[in-house]
Structure formats: structure tokens, C-alpha cells
Length: 106
Image 1: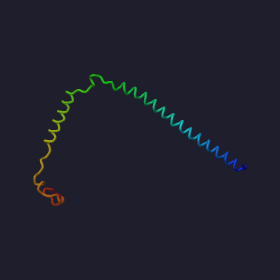
Image 2: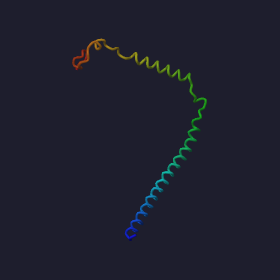
Image 3: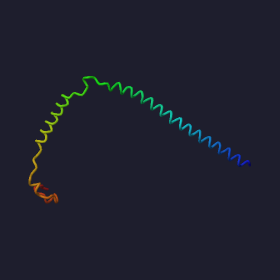
């Protein structure tokens, strides 16, 4: 082998080794952050399970729900009765343009 071929093979070997080192460093970083995220998630999930224990007072109350629903429906009925009735004159005229619609003044 000539000196140039030896140089090229040494340089390519060094470059290959550097690329492998970069790949290993990248892999180590990804693994580190994956483990870090998994640990933080595990600690957080423990707190989530603790806070998800519901007292009997905070459990779903059907009576309160039905009262709230009835009150909402009553309010809705009161608001809809306040709406203006539709003028039948507007229903019989085709909507060609706002200028031709009776009852609208400029």
C-alpha cells in the first residue's frame, strides 16, 4: 500500500469512528431524556391517583343534577318566550334582495 492509501484509510477510519461516537452520544442523550420523562411521569401519575380519590360529598348527585337541568330548561323557556314572533309577511316573499324586501327601511 502506498502512503496515500494508508492516509486515506486512517482518515476514513477516524471519520467512521467519529460518526459512531456521535451516534452513541445522540443515543445516550435520547435514552437519558426518555428515562427522565418516564420518571417524572411515574411521580406525577402517583399524585394523579391520589387526587382522583373522590369524597362521598363530591360524588355525582342525581338530585342536584336534575334540579340544575330543570332550572336551565325553565330559563331557556323564559328566554325563548321573549323572542319576537316571525312576521308572516316575510315568509311569503322570496328573498331576492334586501332592497325588494318589504318592511326593511333604509
